[in-house]
Image: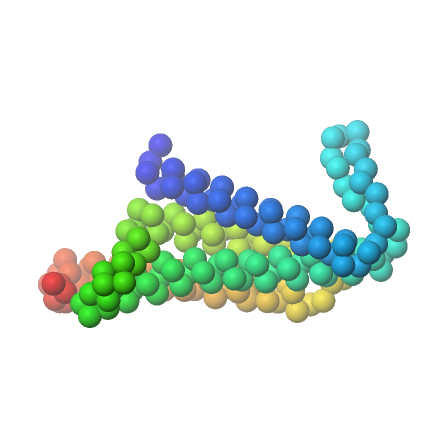
Length: 184
C-alpha cells in the first residue's frame, strides 16, 4: 500500500472519529437542553434509533445538534487548515523559520507526506458533513443558515487546499526551470 494511502486512511479515521463523536455529543446535548422525552429503540435490522414524540421536537433537537456539529466542523477544519497551510507557508521566509526554531514550534511543521493526506481526508469529511446537514435541512426543515454555512465552509476549505497545492506545484516547476531562486 502506498505511503500516501496509509496516511490518508489514518487521517480519515481520526477525522471520522472526531466528527462522529461531535455529532453524538451534539445530539446528547440537544436532548438534554430541550428536556424532551425520548425512547431508544432497536429495529430488527440491528439499528438503534431515538424516537421523540412530536415533529416540532425533532426539528428543535436536530437544529441544536446540527448547529453544534457545524460549529465543531468549522473549528476543526479551520485548525487543520491554519496549522498546515499558513504555518508551513510562513516558514518559507528565513526570519520566520528562525522564530519557529526559537519558540520550539518545529513539531508543527509537516512535509507533503503528512500534510496532503491530512488535508484531503479532512476535506472529504467536511464535504460529507455539508451533505449530511443539507439532508437534515430537507428532511426536518432546520434553518437554512446551517447548510449554507457548512457548504460555504466546504467550498472555502477546498479552494484553500487547492490554492496551496497550486502554489507548491508552481514553486517546484519554477525551481526546476531555474526561474526562481531557492531560499537558503
